[in-house]
Length: 601
Ligand SMILES: Cc1cc2nc3c(=O)[nH]c(=O)nc-3n(C[C@H](O)[C@H](O)[C@H](O)COP(=O)(O)OP(=O)(O)OC[C@H]3O[C@@H](n4cnc5c(N)ncnc54)[C@H](O)[C@@H]3O)c2cc1C
Image 1 (tube, rainbow, N blue to C red):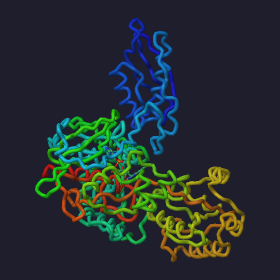
Image 2: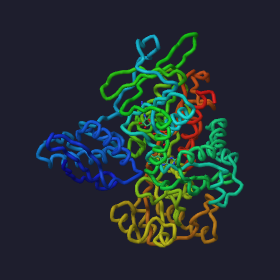
Image 3: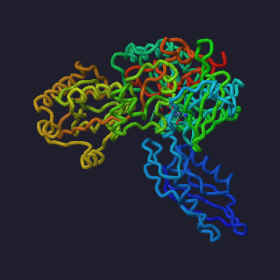
Image 4: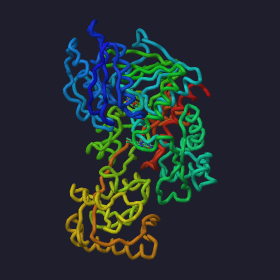
């Protein structure tokens, strides 16, 4: 046996592939990878790729969709390593894997399955059309993101047979990209690590109801907030170590119910750390007997329409071989395919702010989140609700707004040079205001600040990074406000007046215009303007459900056998996203709730 190795740059750094070859037999014996960054999406993909490579004793394994940069690099390195042995000569038939990114745009080239392109069936499939079912399970879960995995784990721990169907090559969906944080009120950890000693799920519910602006259903919000502490404990049982709790900045009209509620686990909190959560859920579910099929899309629901009642009894799947298969769901189907994140057509019809983001390629959800579950539900008469809202935050440098960094002394101005929002409010609230201003005036909005603003401890800029951003054209610099106004094309008198008013009030320590509480200090020149640019973490809105996560039809009647969970369901989030940890909290809750409802628990 001889070992050969080669290196390639992956998503998280350089990966080394080691290939052990039995030269006498001219065969690969074993393949492994070194320098893999643990707890990353790349690591999860690499584990999948290596499993296939070692099973088939080959390195000609397609990159894994969902982790294509890391696994594409590993494939290339492994082929280079194997070719160092004189007994093998393997062609690298995937020339480019450029742009196949774990954080969004996917331009995967030949040789790698592109699961985003499975078309949904246009004809309704009834049980009458089905000759034979390929297999049957108590519960079929569509989509292996956080919601789908929570449903599968709950079903498996309650002894139900469960199959999860996932379009991508790895589990986790957009949940992998999240920080994995969860909002919950009244936990011991909240008491131990924050000043909020008397917070309650009822308070949490009031905050979400206020933020929902009359567009959310109280029964859904109530069930979610009441159960969030229990869900935190459930995840701890499978090995998630919760370490601290923090808060987001304010929602101006919901301040009375605010508390630090964002629960973070060990090695969590930053984008990409959600993989820790999804891997725990996945392994827990698999250990309890759940099954999962990758690179396969659910393309239709199977219904039984007897007795004037529509009942969902199974799903139609399509894999990379493009063969349709029928799977029977004895007790229920859970749709957990997220919202219309990457679907430009549906976004145009249903969610104008989201539409602008997807059009500008600023949605960082997985490319497979196309709203399939929503379309399949609608195709058999399901109602939809809650569209229009979106999870927008700052995209370009992360400097302008971040709910963990209180805003530095600065103001936002619109195309008329006027202030229009509390700059210190939570990101999606603020970006809704930015969107409205930019649409109405057809001009960008800016964050205006002074050289002294960056001396604040909380400043995301230091002197050097600010100079860099000015050079890169991300920030505009001027000696006077008049010059700045001319550079950003706003009326000079308005900009001068906006800054002077802010400075005068800030010197008195308050913000009577918008009631801001952080970063209240006057600022002076030279002056800077940072153009607000939204980035998008997913659309809000989905199938209408009742408290049991049972999908409702357009007459508000439950569709037997059909459930929706996570961002695939609407009505639990309103016109904008109320703050970090809400989505992950909700998807875990609804995944569990859907499985429990199907099982009558
Ligand atoms: C970069 C980023 C950071 C974020 N950070 C946070 C955060 O810190 N806290 C927070 O609360 N929220 C955060 N969010 C939002 C949050 O991650 C998502 O709202 C949430 O994870 C969605 O979960 P889900 O289970 O509903 O969908 P997903 O996790 O996206 O799962 C849906 C799954 O369905 C699969 N699928 C789609 N169609 C089909 C089909 N037809 N057949 C089979 N499978 C299908 C997809 O491939 C995907 O795997 C963040 C989002 C992004 C993009």
